[in-house]
Image 1 (cartoon, one colour):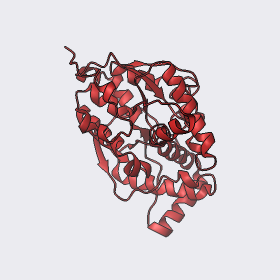
Image 2 (cartoon, one colour):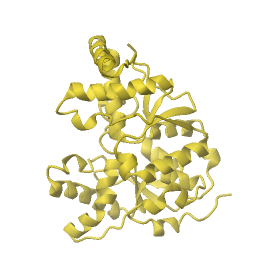
Image 3 (cartoon, helix red, strand yellow):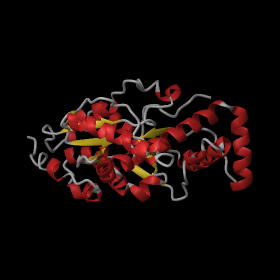
Image 4 (tube, helix red, strand yellow):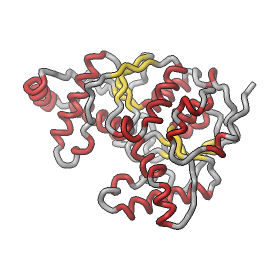
Length: 306
């Protein structure tokens, strides 16, 4: 069966999958994504019955993970729309499960047998899964973003953080961009008028994957990247994953205390940066919810372009 998970989006309406972390720890991400989508004429359809994507149990019970993912995909399939995620881990989890279920007929039959037995559901493999950031990249290609830029961000220098799950697994995402040299987030930053900053260890993990096992190692991984970004004089970091945000923003004060260094680096979700460029007010983008305040950065974005 053909894998349709990452084809170029053709519709202006998407089923929105929030996952677990976004509604609880990244409401500003959801708020800004919805606001930007509205501004660009993209519509989100919500499914209240969505559950966890299955990622947390992937390493301990793979079939359980696939079954959880399949349930969500089955719910999305009923909508008949592409599935849009905000969380990179959710996107990777659902995309990988979707690919496996589509390609393995025996697995698909087993999944559907259990889905029907437990929930009266089935999944035919017709859902296209994509990340909101990739949808926005398509909008750049269509030049719809450039046509709506209202605020001059050319004074901003922003460091992109891709994270681990945005470009991997390579077997799936490698067809979209080079996972060892990704460009999409840099291009998205440049599309706002801001400058994308290159820095050492740009593609390194945030450390979130080992946070529950060894907090000191996790904090050290985040601190190293914050140090490299500060060395380049960046005004902010931009990312697209809520758990990466937990490391860089949620733990930034702890990092400063442990390593006796001050960073005060604003951490923005990409829709927040794009929203500013589109002329949306900071409060409407959930900027007040950002733990590291972007007060100084915002002073540079108050000019209007001609």
